Length: 150
Image 1: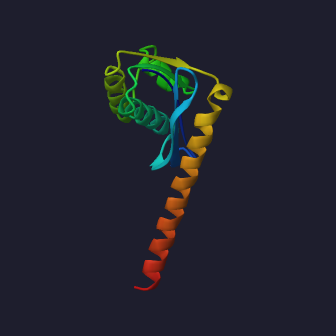
Image 2 (image 1 turned 90 degrees about the horizontal axis):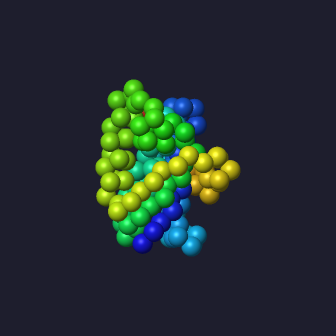
């Protein structure tokens, strides 16, 4: 089965509360699955890679064999295509994981798109960032309450 994957990730504060958004579509454009998830505190680039990895795992789980991938992160796309070097160890580890997952498809192709072409994944990534920010606020509140009672 052929699939089309749109992914986005971001962080508020960079690093800050981070989230990922993934939209997996069938070849005819029908949505197969969506994902919006907070990933805690991370940088924008870590969030972008995390979104891609989550999307690749989702596509594999759904039986996709051939995948066209679209991201608005020029950095991630250029690094994965070998155009740009990966100097950061964390990003290098994430890139290795992403390449490994991409290799499990019969075919996969990654392309950079303008942000306007990635709006659905962007909205989901923002929902993920909201969730991460809420989790962070609740963690802070819980820590403040526990110290109050000590």
